[in-house]
Every structure is written in structure tokens, then in C-alpha cells.
Image (cartoon, rainbow over all chains, first blue to last red; front, side):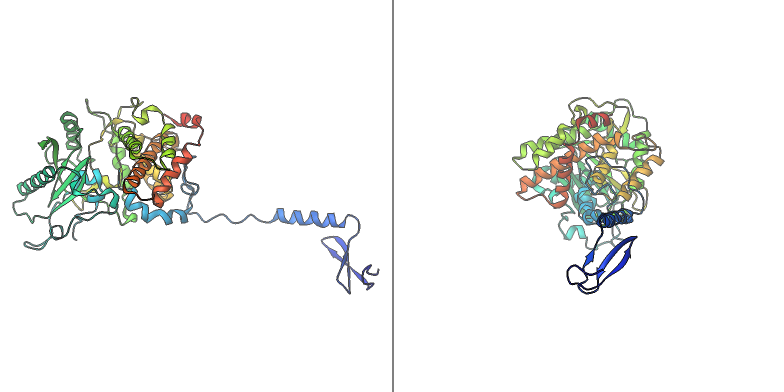
Length: 96
Length: 363
């Protein structure tokens, strides 16, 4: 078939089981009825199947903490603790 | 090794309180003493170090003289290394070589103090024993004498003796309480800190602290008797309350001023609160809690979630810590620092947790 825009010949490609036509001149793409939806569905499936981001490294599971605990404190967020540690240790932990 | 003359001293609060006395002096005879040639260090928390004029001069001078006399009675050849370890309205502590003299708070009664001193004398494997279980009167204050113990190093978090602290508490909590011992004073101290916050003057952080305080059951605010008073408790545990005596010996608890019968979870609640506020790393909290459980401590269930038992005391100690921090910031006309703010933030979150959760967790 011919490209409806530039009249150059179009070639057929198979993308994930969907037949698409691409113009050899302007690189435009022609989709048959339902093909756009097929591609969208395939894209969505691919996103869902993507592996979750790896969990933050933790030496061991954090012990339970109360609901009013610090958002990261008490939940094994070591960076946060390291930040506060030296400041709080010699002060808060030594006084009534 | 040169013993620390400061350490627990300045910051050691009640800690320093009880036992800041060096057992032996390692300096050669005639050597210059750091303690003599240099003013007492401010300690890690400048805000906690009150100026020497916060108590009447005669008391401090008298206490210093008594410490010297007690030290010389113990060791005829004394290098005379002296330092003021703590000087606050609620306790003044002076060290002379291997001896510490403590002037107890004004509201201390002789009968209550004597029963607490007797307890310490009977359990020298848990509490630093006094040199004499009978207090003496000095300018209207009760004074006691102690051997100097080496405090926890406030500059070395990795050296903190979490397991030893936990094991000492478990042992204390399992020790039968003697007849007539007064109640543990933890809730009363928390209530006093909140009262001082109310008197301190306006501050934006006062409201969240007071809201958090309001979530507590009456017993935790010292407005009703504690629900369980069969267990021997320390009443004011923090890292300044641990010393080694002798210097290479076992860790012991010091400061008997708040010791009594009560809810043992109170003694675990300060580390629990530090953990909840993000000030204590999970690993160190876990070491403390695990060691307490392994030593058979009765304050929390042997396994599972300890927070149903810890929640109320940890809330109370968080509110107490925040109240003290805000009152000090108001008095000094300075903003809260990052660590203080994290404790106030915890109070803020506490007030939003539904009250039924508090009830559910209350013992």
C-alpha cells in the first residue's frame, strides 16, 4: 500500500503480534482498527510484569515500633539513624 | 589509663549523681591533676550543666569539704583530685579522688532515702553500694557518700553497654521488693517536667507535648496509683545511670533517688522511646530488648510484640523528654535543635493515634 501522506510505499512489520505498516519515506505509521488498543494493552501488561524495585538493604528485620514512632526511625532506615546518632547519643541518652 | 573525671559527671545527672568517684588515682605523687588545673568540663550537654551557683554556696562548699574528708578517711595518701560532677536543684554531686558525695533533692525524706540506700547496700551485684547506708545532714540537705565508678563514655556510642544494662534491669525486676520501699518515682518525675513546661512560658512546641501528655492514663501522669506495684524498679534509667566499679569490674546501676516499686516497663521505656523517636538505631534497641528477655525480665512478654507493655511508659518518657527540652529552650531563648525537635514531633504524632489504641495498649 501507499502512504496516504507522502505516497511512498509502506512496509508491514510485526510488533508483539500486531501488524503495523510503516512508510518507507516519512516513517509514518498506519494502524488498522483495534491495533492501537492491542498495543496499549501489551504496554500495560509489560509495565505490570516489571519487577518491583529492590527493597532497601537491611541487616535484619526491624523490631516492632509504635504507631507514633518516627516515620523512618523504628523501621530500619539506617541512614536516618546515622544522621542523628552521634548528636543524640551523648545528649539525650545520658539525661533524665 | 587515665580515669575520666568528667564523663558521667557533668551529664551523668543523677547518674553522675550516685557514683562519680574514682576508685584509685593513677597519677604519681605530686603530679599535677587535670581536675585541679582545669575547670570541670561542661559535659556533652551544655544545657544540662547548671552553673555552680544554682545551689547555695555553703552547700557546695560544705559538700566539697565532706567529700574530701570522706576520701581522706578511705585513703590516707590522697592525690586530692576533685571535681564537681553535677550541680542541679535536684542533686549536687562532688567527687574527691575515689569518693563521691551527693546532696539529694530537697524533697527527699530520711526514711525513704534510707530504705533506698539499704536496698542498694543489700544488692551490690545490681546497684552501686553506698559507703554508708545512713545519710548525713548538711545545710538542710541529705548527703550520701559513694565509691567513684567509671561512667559510660558519651563519645563512644559503640561502647554503650546495652546488654549489661538490660541484664541489670532484669535482675532488679526479679528481686523481691523489701517491705516498706516507696513507690518508683518515674511518673512523678514526668509530671514535674510537664509542670515546668507549663510554667516556662509560651512556645509553639508546648501544645503538641501537652496533647501527647493528655493521651496518657492517670497513673502515668502521677494522678493515680500505678496499676502494678509489686516490682522493684530503678525509676530513672538512662546511660548516665551505669558505672563500672571497680574500673575493670562489672557494670552497676547508680542513683537510688527514684528507686521503688512500680511498673517495670518504665525502666525499659526510655530506650524504647529513643528507638521510637528515631534516636536509637534498631539494632541497639534489639540488643537491649533481647538481652532483657534472655535474662528473664518480667516487664514485657518473653516473645512477640513488646509494645502493648511499653507504649504508655514510652509515651510518658517521650513527653517528659520533650517537656524538658522545650522548657530549656524557652529559658535559654534558643530554638529547638534537631534532636529535640524529633522528640516533639513524636509527641505530635502521638496525639493523633486514636485514644482507643492507647486504652488497648494500656496495662
